[in-house]
Image: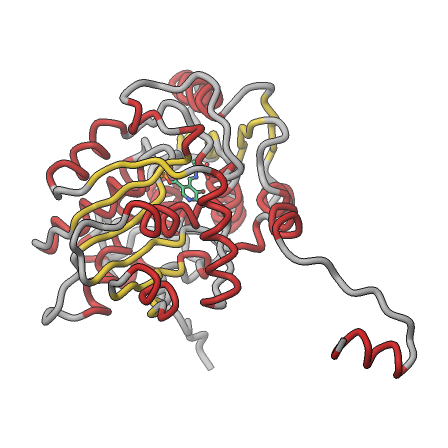
Length: 345
Ligand code: F0G
């Protein structure tokens, strides 16, 4: 029996819209084709028809895999023997996994103490060299850019154009899933380094559609909202703890030309949305992802009737924040009466 992939990767699915020819090397883990699920409780709460794009169901648990299959495949095509990135966690997990699969080396620079446990475990398990920088993401990105200029190492942050090419396919999937009769009016998406919103907008434009793009940043790390870099970004949503996004102009262009907006949400609002999604929709995303839903709940999405929120990463990435936010366990003796009391009491 010949091997059969049950889920084709996105290069294979969308090859005609991607810069890959037949016969090019493809490093894939079956990424993309993630569910778009209706969110009844959220829809009722905000008075619009809301859909959730579950990007946490990608192979390493975040949307980064869409970009990474393209970035690492292109790196292999160019003969690269190593990849590098700066990361708040998810990019490093994804780069490490795809590099492992490609049989090339991977180094990642992450900010000290500010990356979620699951992401760190992933990068280490996949055999990346994990460098913990006494500095923040913005400093790490500046350093890896310089390093990649000086050495033959392929930079796989979203400054790499192949990353955006891969990530734009999420727009294709949303448009395909919703059909042409009632297209999407608005997209709500968290913004950190601003690559993903840029990629979604590119994808929509390539299909000739233009939903309003609403980008949401954490209030303590909201340079696009403030119109100036933030020197010391702070937020519970560690994935978007970024003060000087690399794709600043392109992201602003996406929001202005689509008549959307960029707005801030506080950590308390992010955590409210995070708990709401888990408790009411059965969807466990990471805090940064919940910024899209927090933004929709707090600021709305204009007069949009049909809205999609991008849930960028899985909740299991960050067990510590989850345990901080969740209810307590119920200790119990191993006796029926005690269990009865514990269950029913
Ligand atoms: N949501 C999650 C879960 C992320 O990990 C990121 C970015 C974003 C949203 C924001 O996307 O940067 O394209 O605007 N994480 C990067 C990383 C920075 O290193 O994993 P963006």
